[in-house]
Length: 151
Ligand code: ADP
Image 1: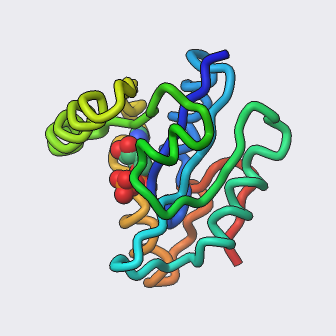
Image 2: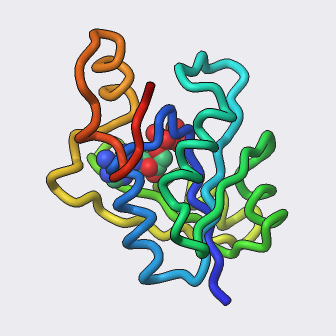
Image 3: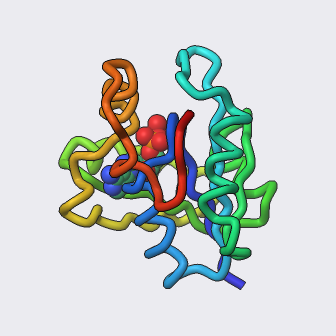
């Protein structure tokens, strides 16, 4: 049984994140989406709302679940019995960041990080862009996973 975690902030969970999870399901039997609680970062969507939106997205996919965590990502992985960390890569700066963290995590407890390149049409989509669009009253339907709405 291959289980991976997909950790992130997901403020909010976008169609780019959705695509990585759906592609990850070709590689892993189960994916646990982990919402890291970052006390220093001010979020737009509170943690329970983020969980609700992700649950709604994957309501018909029983191989995907979501949990929040308030610890090191490798400790969260161990807690849920996952040997892999799934992450998405959009840009060279994503690569630099992931490279450092992935090596540290492997050194710390042997966990492997699996990186998937973003689909080109989603490469510019980030939670930050979506939050900005919300702030200025734009429609964000196209940036969210299918069937998810923000009220
Ligand atoms: P973090 O704060 O940990 O970067 P995010 O919620 O921003 O959390 O992103 C979680 C993961 O999803 C990261 O691996 C990020 O690179 C990836 N990701 C974000 N947006 C996209 C996208 N449009 N396409 C592919 N991967 C993405």
